[in-house]
Image (cartoon, rainbow, N blue to C red; front, side):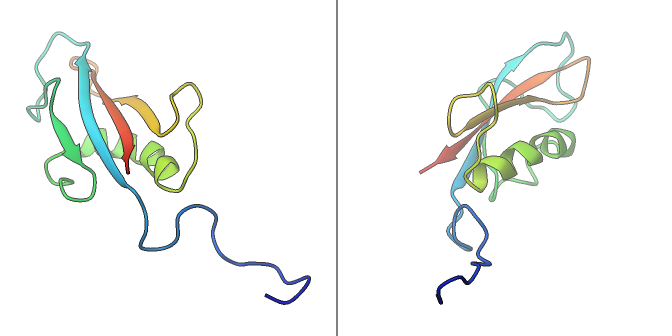
Length: 101
């Protein structure tokens, strides 16, 4: 790159080299069972299992997953992880997203 030139490469992982993200249901805080059938202990690969993960939980988790995938950190979480809840108030499944090396 020429001296003084600005790099237009995005920060984070190079294209095609994004890390895998594992999503685990770690807790259920509500009284009702999940309408999508999730329960603590369920594990999903974000890229391979998108159709298996509840769309509402996926919608809530996507911003955190995107942050992790591109090398960012979510405040209040250990490096490479992010916890989030589904929006179903009677169920409240808690999910842990983590970078898989």
